[in-house]
Every structure is written in C-alpha cells, then in structure tokens.
Amino acid sequence: MLTGELPRRVRPAQLVGRSINGTLSLERLPRLAEYAAGGSLSASLAFAEDQAQRYLLVTGEVRAVLRLPCQRCLTEMDWSFETNVQWGLAGDDAVAAHLSKTLDLDPVLLERDGTLDLEESLSDEVLLGAPMDAMHSTACSDTALWRSGDVA
Image (tube, helix red, strand yellow):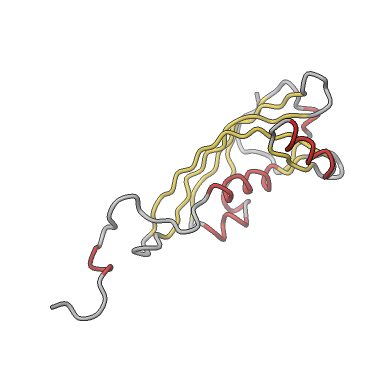
C-alpha cells in the first residue's frame, strides 16, 4: 500500500493488486481551486484486473471537504463529500463505451502513454457531486441578510 501525497499520474498496469491512499492539495487541482475557497481531498484506491484480464479496474473512496460560499447568505461554509468509485480504465472511446454499457463501470480514459491522470479523474468525481448552489443545511447565521427594503 502506498500512502502520502498522491502523485499526479500513475501507471495502473504496474499497480495491479496494490492500493494507494493519500491526499491532494487544492493548489494542485486548478478546476477545484476555481470552485472552492479552500479545502482538502483524499482518496483510497485499489487497482485490479478483471477476471478475464481484459480491463484494468480502480475501486475505492474519494472524500473531500471544500470551503464554498453559501448562495443564500454569501458566507463560507464547509461542504463534505464522499463517494465510492468504480472506474473501468480505457485506452480509447470504443472501450470506454463498452465498459459503461456492459459492465456498469464509470469509464476513465488513460493517457496515450498508459498513465492515469489522478488529479483530473479525482477532480471530475468531486465536481460531478458538487452542488450547483451550495447552501447551509440549516438557517443561515444572519437571517437579517434575508430581508430587503424597509423594515416596518
């Protein structure tokens, strides 16, 4: 098991039968850094081959805590996210379509050199689960901000 700061890219074929655990800072994830004022992302991923050894699979968990502006009161709030991933790694679009349709896996395209871009793939997972309009789950801290106009 590899732990610590996650690398930008990995070679999944070399990690079959192994797992990696680690974190990524938002500074390394520009698309998430544009969306959030701060936060952290961690992942625990296991690499395997399917039984017929035709596809590489990645399973695991992705967790993030992002600092987002509440769209109701405009103050920052922590938004927690956790999801399980089941990626089927594909070298081209045809294989990706097959993985999605027949094996019910989320297809992830490998780079031309056979590497998996972890930063992009993990960013995709978080952005797909992120709210379009983040809001506190309970009443915002200052309800006076909800009023407009003259108060009688």
